[in-house]
Image (cartoon, rainbow, N blue to C red; front, side, top):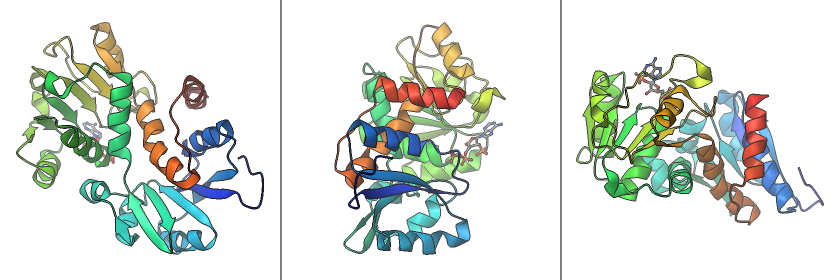
Length: 283
Ligand code: ATR
């Protein structure tokens, strides 16, 4: 919080619960770093009060908010204007209030792709198919990001096959090929990228069971789980000499568009911010 005057700009994150959210740390860091007169606060809002709370925020002078679990789908239905990415992903995570209107965006695809380019600059669309494990909300955003980046083939695998089929049908069956979950070791052949979007590996329990032997040496292995920062999957990939990308950067990059829109300042990740988040995650 770096409130300096009565003109301070306001933003925050709406969730239920919201106490686990790292967004206030992230935005608070950038507000302080850039000496901005503003505040970013956690807003614990129950699902049945989300609509009223959202509509009250512009009246209270807020510039906008992030929206997290469980409000992302409800936000999609309530905004006056929905951007194309949010519509395709099926969820809103960033809201702007402007001229009495509510604008909904989704920055997760941007966050994933920016982090990939930042942490794996040698990755190219032409390196081979992208293997996506999982078919939940995070997978949808990542697949949209990969499709828009020009990936020719996405191999999608999910424990519940029907969910993968549905996702492929909605987002583009020409480039999204659904594989059975038990074929995941084989799906890695010729791949240029593997992304775990499942909750397997979260908090060190129940690791993703995946043999990386068929993965080409130039392939990048990415995990969106960031607690722990080095999941069993990433440790296994490192042991094989593969390039890895952890999930913390996606969290940082997805926050950038909101901050820039609300507070009028371009921001980027840096070592101090990463260290601050790591310290919080390991506390
Ligand atoms: P999010 O919106 O964060 O992506 P989600 O919608 O709950 O979360 O999706 C979680 C993903 O992890 C799903 O792909 C889920 O597979 P199912 O669709 O079959 O449920 C996957 N997942 C969770 N636990 C799993 C497990 N034990 N084995 C394999 N996949 C699992």
